[in-house]
Image 1: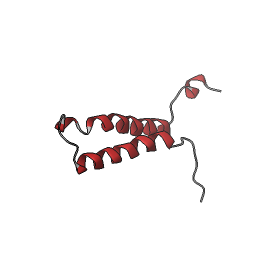
Image 2: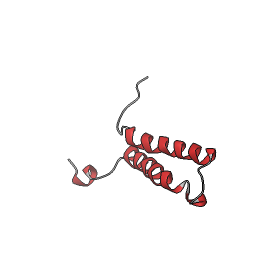
Image 3: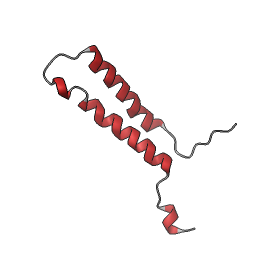
Image 4: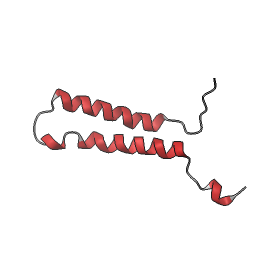
Length: 68
């Protein structure tokens, strides 16, 4: 087994991590522009979308194969 190859991160892992990172940080940043004001329907919509990114990054399974 080649040691350098075993330490590489798969593309699926990197993609899942980036989706997770985007979602987890954006959940907290969505309301910053209206800090101290009431939440609007658009704020809640954006938070729900970023929560889906957060969850999607967590549940993606690297190395899972789709069979046809």
